[in-house]
Image (cartoon, rainbow over all chains, first blue to last red; front, side):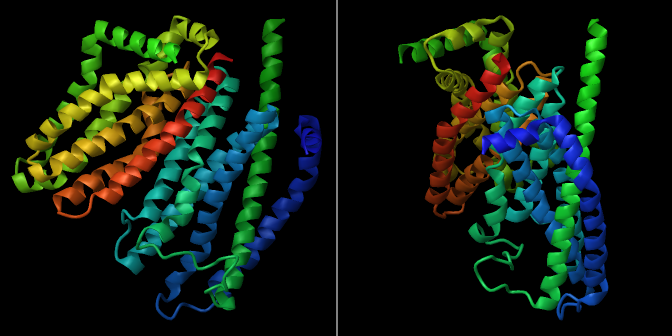
Length: 243
Length: 221
């Protein structure tokens, strides 16, 4: 396990490998978004109760999933970075944070736009909305912490611990709709139960979820590649300053 | 075990020598509470309606205010490294520091909270629950704060940063604490909220020293 992980921890190998797969991820993202957005905006029926506003869901739900997914990615990468001291894992965690914060903002913004026509208010202080807002603050706190040190190495390690501590919020977000009696509806899609959604709505939602996942992977690869190059530039600049 | 108590006694002695510093946190909470009647207006029913939440928010802010000193002074003069070399494991060191912080800031806040609540026209029916909930909640603030204080060691603007990192994590304590007092005021069952508050305390007692120790290890590393 660690042996195979160490192979990918080599930055040069990572640069080669990511260069090869990046166009496929980017292409897949575009294709999935074209299909998903077509199905979501034109190919699916309007809801009998909510009308056309139900289409907000096709952006809102995948964005919320990825907001949690990105944080979990960040926490996993932080654990790897702390345990095995992989420099690349640090870069993955740091690169995932702004993307995840972006997904969280999208989920909150689309949720507010959807809440106004459906609930009659942009915002309620129920458990799901509040815990997602806390998730955004955790992302912002992490970003502030890793940039607060003169030594980026120290910032990365402090951030890794914070990411792991903050992960406690992820299950709270996930189960908030079951634990508390919230205005936000409980999950409609479960791996174990028969889904409560009709296929005509389920298919576009899943395609959009795949599109968001590919978008996350593409952006993450791109940001980690940039961070690797930036780090090498910094090392070279330091070496030149010393000589 | 002796090393643990010696460390607590040392921190308490240091705070006693600078008693003004220690009291600033409580005075800050008092001032925050006093601001509310000016901002909202002195109507008794509005003030008594928001009293529980205001006292809790003031206590949380006051606890955050004094956190950046938790490890910083010892880190600056190198005694933190000496302590880390001593017989005490890092998690016990963090726990001792958090305990001392709670004794210096949390305990006065608990004592002050019923007075603050009365100033905000809280009915006396809620005072006992408020004090009990504060007794369970303020140690959580100190323990969570120890994580943040360890993480920001050596950072720029550490004081603001530690509040920014820890306030989101302290929200559950705030919710259950305010809800317990609220329940007592409206003649409902406060026990479930107090139990959840106790669960928060036990969880942070078990996990926070380890996380703070990891943070200290990185800072000393």
